[in-house]
Each structure stands twice: as C-alpha cells, then as structure tokens.
Amino acid sequence: MSRYNTTYRPSNASQKLPGLALPPPSTTTPRTATTANMSNLFGSAASAANANPTQGDLTKDVAVTNPPEDSIADMCFSPASDHLAVASWDKKVRIYEIDGNGNSQGKAYFEFEGPAMNCAWSKDGTKVFGCGADKTARVLDLGAGQTQPDQASQVAVHDQPIRCCETIVVNNTQMLVTGGWDKMVKYWDLRSAAPAAQIECKDRVYSMDVRNDMLVIGTAERWIHVVNINNPGSFYKVMQSPLKWQTRVVSIFSPEPNGFAIGSIEGRCAIQYVEDKDQTNNFSFKCHRQQAPADRNISNVFAVNAISFHPQHGTFSTAGSDGTFHFWDKDAKHRLKGYPEVGGTISATDFSRSGNIFAYAVSYDWSKGYMQNTQQLANKIMLHPITGDECKPRPKTGSKR
Image (tube, rainbow, N blue to C red; front, side):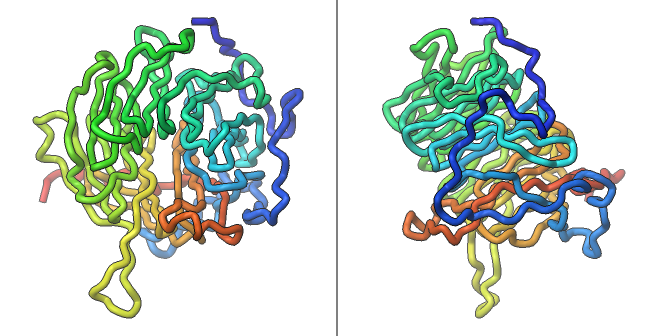
C-alpha cells in the first residue's frame, strides 16, 4: 500500500485550501437557519443550568454553514481532527472543518452519479470514503492534498446500490468494507480493483458499524450479522433482531465494544450483547413516541433513525422521525436528557472524537415518501456543545435494587 502523508492537520478556519472548489449555491431558496454568533459556543456560557435537570437545552446549538442541498443521509467526525464528513442525496460527500470556537467551513467535497448514502474516515483521518446509489464507493485522499471532486477515485463496486461503508485495519493494512442492497459485504484493499474477500448476508444491508475487531451488519427482515474482522470471511454470529419491526440502525457500544444497540421503525431501541454469557443483560425500551392529543390511549410512533455512542462515557444518543434526540445510560437503564423538537426529522448524528460536540442533521428521512420532500422542510446540520454532566453516566450506587 502506498505511504500516506501523515502531516495533514486542521488548517485555520479563516484560511482556504489552495484551489478549493465548493459546490455551487442552490438556485432555490436555501432551507437553512441563520447561523448564530458562535464565539461562546464551547465556552462557560454554554453550561448554564436548565431548570429541569432532565430537559436538555438547545439554545447554544448552531448551524453548520453551507449545508447540503438535499436530504442528509449520513455524517461522521474524523477520528484524528475536528472535521465532519457528510453524505447527502444531492450526490455529494462534503468535508467541513469545525474550529475550536465551533465555527464551520467547507473544505472539500466529491461527487457520485446518484445519492450519496454513507461516508467514513480512514483510521488515521487522512482519507474520506463515500458510497452511493450508483453502486460505487469513492475516496478522497486529504492527506495527499486532494480537495477537488475530480481527484476522488473509485475504490469499490457492487451489483446494487451500496448502502454502507466502514474502514478497518487488518494486518496493519487499512481496508474499506462496503455493504449493499445486493446482500454482499465486501472487503477492499485499496491497492486492488477486486475485493480481497466478500461474504453474503441473508438480505439487503441497511446499516453497518465497526469498532475494534467487531463488525455488525443490520439487514432487511431484521437480520443481524456479527463479524470478527480477524476472520472476515465468516459470520461470528447471525441472529434476528429482538425488535419486531424493520431495523433502521445498528451501533456498537463504546468504549467497550462487547455489544450493540439496534433502532427500529417502531420507536424502540434494543441493547444486545454478543457473548452468550452476557445475554441476561439484553433489554429493549420504547422511545420516540408521542401521546396523541385527542386520545391519551393512543401513541404516535416514530422511527429511531440514528444511534451514536459517546467515545468516552459509554452513554449513547437516539434520534428519530419525531424531531427529538435523547441521551441514555444503558447500564443504569436510564434516560439522562431529552431535548425539544428541532423543527424536522433527525436523519443522522455523531459525536466528535473528544465527545464535546454532538452533531445532528435536521433533514427529511423519506419516511413519508418522495411526495413529502419539499423545499419548505428544514435541511441543516446542527452542532450541540456537550457540557457538564449531559452525557455522563449516573453515579453507581453501592447496592442494586
């Protein structure tokens, strides 16, 4: 594998990369909120106490500048710097820089021939990968100074749209993993045009996550596949989700990857451990539901679109079609914070590498079909500063009840 340039570092937000070409502005009315003054975003002013200890505060949240022009499918922070990659239905993967004060600036992007459905960073933060409905995956090598769309190269192909991509390290070699609607999961050594290995899932791939040596794949018909990436050609475990409705998202525990969370379209989340000895710790709970105003016996149920684990605390977020997000402590089986509706469905979330920023996309999630996707819907990326004990687990007591 070619030697990477490891000197790539975040530049000052006021500087532009040489020759950078950002996507042209939309000719339609932008679906964005006015960006607030962010000078105190991550300062002491952001830690003002809320009168309700379980009610979260959104007043310090600010919008990323120049967001995508269509629905946001996925986003992820770099593991090595304060950069955010965003995949969108406008066929682009964008890379934003977030500076120490929370200011954001577009730095690079690359394009597909169809909607971009997922994105991922190399483990050293020098490369950004994306995959899309055009059945390909592409890479932009930021470490080599690539910032232009025509500098991106194709690195993977499937027979059907590629829904998910992740990166792994096998034998000290960085590799790309792709999962598609052709039921295939493929492993790519970037030095070769052919997959190094592949494995067939029971159905179309809908969601995928990787951490350390664990790869978890969620497919249609509620199948969950667990892979030990040290033995990538076989499944370590195959099971059906304990939830009764379609899987929307799977997310591996952090920092200890001994299990994963599953979110479904029925407003439920399941906490699932991998090893048989831990199965008594499995449980599920209802979330993202609203009581019908006309009848207290009826609940409106919304999909859980995104689950993200805090990189240090082991707590996690859920976000859904009801336009809210929540922070949870799985070990205490307790909700830490709930937040007000944000003005639209939330389609994607992620924590920054330090865990001090929570990014969420207020964007149409296609749950009501293409006819409901209009220019009036919000389409923005918000940055929420994590302060105080928002994401810290509950203190452990001396005895169990």
